[in-house]
Image (cartoon, rainbow, N blue to C red; front, side, top):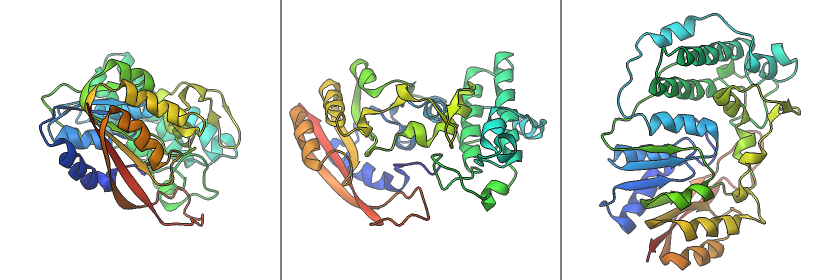
Length: 330
């Protein structure tokens, strides 16, 4: 998934830096702002127990599978079945396709109906106990990952394109996503990070909060609706769902330092690592001053390609400087 702030291209950098500071003799890692779970997945594959958390429910579903599910799931024929069920004129079609809404074109009419049909059927299968909880999250995570590839957007859901792009014109096909095996306990939460941090312990705490004023809740609101399928009240040109309870203080200049300091203060861990770039709401000095309260502080840097949500926008710079701040807690 093309996700704001994804660390896919930075995993080698993160891994080498974390190893240099913390070594390899650690058992648990907390990914407190997990997003699509890229960092947690990496360290789960490395043989660690992961504590994964995100306030967005679509993220929770993705991580309930990628982190929480630890053995292969034997649903061999269900994908063929789900890809053949009749179309449904449901919430996604009625509100996020041109044929249903008369304006919004987030998906083709066909793919919006396919999404509604599959999402509805997954819920029916689960409620009728035809699939268990593990299988339920596997199917939902597969739906979220797959439908995103057919979205008629530049990359996020803050706006839709005026014409269907080529990938959005293709017929949506649901495919199974990977499962990461593990014999260790794995934990997945859907909580406010500042609340959860008071109740968990991990050898390594990895923080990747929002850097700027872009709220993830608004940029991925349709994935949130597909995940919950709760027929929310929506408004505006983009059909935005209400998201006041999911607004992050890390996206607010007036609140970000207090929110960050609260997490650092309450963290029960040996090592804290923070990913943040040079254009974030907090300055490197802000971060240093807060993290130094817990112990020995340092940082690494790497030049990194900018995330571009709008291919037609002229960005002043094509690159940013990615910081990995760290502290060895005393």
